[in-house]
Length: 288
Length: 265
Image (cartoon, rainbow over all chains, first blue to last red):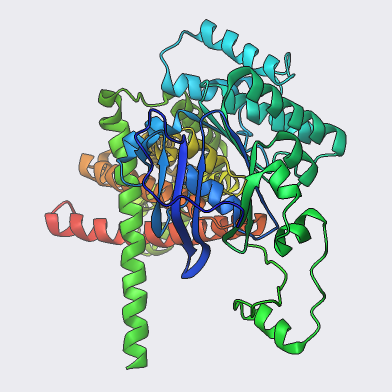
């Protein structure tokens, strides 16, 4: 590990980290997906969570917004213990978080404009005319001005992602979470999304967490990175530190070395029975 | 022992399912009646749209089906009654069986096919495409946002549709009456209305209200508990229809028994 995880309690919010994850474990139907994750995200920082398919990185992000409940451990967001407070208080925090889902998760039954307007209509008492202006502003920010009346199904993949970002921005959040922002997009469109994230970071000093497996985009946007593998934090550090790391798993990820082929019957059986492989014989990561 | 254990597990599963339905209906009712006082107004526009879809658009097919059912009832009743030369009791037989039983039941089954399945498919698709998750991260309660308008639409529309179904059934019966039993239209309608008591209609409407709650709860619960993948949406939809039909019959049995012993017979 490049950085010894800080296990002390998060300090009072004023100067402390925006988000603090303390030894979080998440299980689905008895199988533990995350085995005690700990890291901090400072205010205004962009953290990239890297990891292969099935590493648990998306589960981690879902836990940060309360879509999954940790079986143990704590998540502190904006100075509050996220899973110890009431649902109403949790919702107050959620209003400060904008989340962009992998597939966009725009509401298919609404137009793009209505999608962006939805959080404003639900959580503010703004006039319709004001909301219209804000929707136009947000769509303008992501380069989608003039698309208010389109249905999500009429947009391309990249535009849908942008529209989802516009919706995430609607409430002027302090924190922005992205789940695989460039998944399924061609390199040019993906670069456009990266640029958008950089612009948002520079313009609003938001605290941003991006979950991805795209190295190029991670190096471009990250202040710090966390590499997650099979539910554990393998390494944490700045872009430079990660690039220069000698940790075998980090090197494998950075150098894009494929997993060794399953050579022995025993390894294959272990993979099938979902057991932890023996030390030194990594088995391929599995999908959730 | 093994058999007893299996029965026990099945009973517990069934009870917890009914519990989940009741809890969902309760949360929707809370959002409808208490929510507005907590600053979360009900989405009436959405409720109206749902009512149009589940209610008004069901009218053509419901009319046709209940017209035929009325006609069938008249034919079946006449088969027995004509042996006693009692064909003038056909309107009463049709009117009473429509209002008390078949009107609410056929309406419920048509609505299950059209709307119960659609609820499960709509919410299931939203679940699969992370739209439900998106609602939650936007601090919007999916029950308040999606389920409550459907409940409002259904508990209002089902009784209305039932009244319509009752009328269409009697109209179907009158076709037989006029063509085969020497009734005139007005005499047939008069005979029907005379045979009916208010309680016949009211018990039918109470049942249809309960059917509305049941169908919405099952459709929405199945949608919300959809797992990952498009294939799961199909499975939820099928399950919603099968479970709804079963539960509607069960609710029908419970309420019919209740009315029987309460003396509304």
